[in-house]
Amino acid sequence: MGFIFILILCAIGLTFLVHAAIHFILRRYHHHRMSSTNLKSLHNNEVSITSAPPTLFFSSETKLTAGEVECAICLAEFNAGDGLRVLPACGHGFHVTCIDAWLSTTLSCPTCRAIAQPPNINNVSDDQLQN
Image (cartoon, rainbow, N blue to C red; front, side):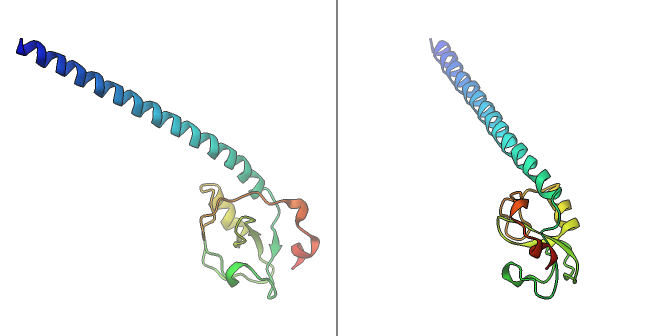
């Protein structure tokens, strides 16, 4: 009689473990699928960011967020005439080649980690492109 009782307890324990494993796998699959969908939509936006022209060209009068005077990616100072891309979500600016390479692998600002949003090219004025 004790053997049957132990066998029933083992069966219940095994059933619980199988149920927990299936629940874990399905939950992980659902989370992965949802994050992949979000990343695909962000990558579609990233194409818009990197295919856009530089937001502005650096000059001595250019004012960036927090008074930036160097690219946070390559750590080189901005020079007059350097093409910069300013991320619209946070306002941080970077060399075009630096931020394009960054955004090809990571979809956030290298300075503050804000999600990069595509710029609205229609709102960029000629004055901003020349300053």
